[in-house]
Amino acid sequence: MTVEAVPVGQVCNLKCTYCYENTMREAGNLGGSYDLDAMIKTLREEGQQFTVFGGEPLLMKFPDLERLLQFGFETYKGNGIQTNGALIEDRHVELFKRTNTYVGVSIDGPGELNAARPPKENTEKTLRNIEIMVKSGVGVGLIVTLNYHNAAGGRLEYLKSWFRELDKLGIKSARLHLLEGHHARDIELSKEDTLKAFLELYRFEMRELKNLRFDKFDEMLSLLSNDGKNVSCVWNDCDPYTTNAVRGVNGDGSRSNCGRANKEGVDWVKANSSSHIRQLALYHTPQSDGGCGDCRFFLVCRGYCPGTAIDQDWRNRTEHCETLKDIYGVLEEALLNVHKTPISLSPDRKQLEMDLLAKLGNNSVVRNQVHIDWHMNNGVFTGTVPVK
Ligand code: SF4
Ligand code: SF4
Image 1 (cartoon, rainbow, N blue to C red):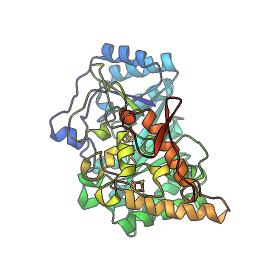
Image 2: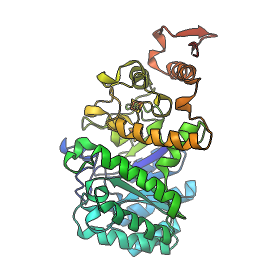
Image 3: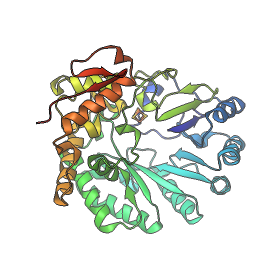
Image 4: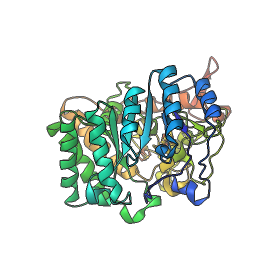
């Protein structure tokens, strides 16, 4: 679970066309003012390390940012911050070092590869700042969103040469994001280009990179192998009204959810209890109606992040479904080639799905509804299906 401190709300110095926070901006729910005492009180109650988030958190007044990060360092021994990197100055680098702050930078590549994140003069500044931070000993990771500008046609080679440079620089982590198409259809990759880009980067990571890792492939392989390793929230039955993986702390100290789930432009107050109704409904809904019915990857996907749902409606499965199926299909073969059976092809798959549904049902508001495949056993719902 991540605690996100959001002092400046959705206010940002860039105008990225695909930003999922644009829904909030268009609705006029920008936020932008903060009361540090109120935030620190709530962050203390949360009792764990936090990441400063935005919008662009470096729009905070420097002394306020310093106080926030110093509080995090003294209380929790370190911090995170997620930034577009363009506003970083020497004093920020010194502050990050002094307060053991890990810096996540969102950037899609050098030059034209970063065209979805205007204005373009900021790209050079961000690249320079990444280098300065790494050479100064600040921990840096990247978020790279694959889109038409950085992964279509020959630009994929350009992206790979940039990753080679980052690898040499010593950066260890880059999270590859799938573009949320409903914000930016014009720069969406075709299904074929998305698969090509992912597979090319998967092979590239294995064959050429020494330091840099793209977490998506590790997570998907780990899920297919059923090895129990921790994976990110998108695979973890997220409820859009509680987003258990994210506890936001707003500028006034109130609590909120992950912004990716705010599709109506409203930052809903965090609900007190969570529900798995999305995953249960998706399992039982045919794919022709927006669900995941009969998908062999349900155990390892469960409809993915509700913030990426078809038509921005969390009741639907993700709009990335076809891409995920393609990638999982390739990873299945990779496991079979080393004589491992992916969970998606396990003869026990149906029983494992029933066990999962029972688990989700026990922690959900739908547990009072009896499903035909479930029965009560010592007050716990369980499911049993014949294994063919
Ligand atoms: S909405 Fe998506 S990104 Fe946000 S916590 Fe849920 S799964 Fe994660
Ligand atoms: S791959 Fe598609 S159909 Fe299968 S579980 Fe994921 S979103 Fe649902």
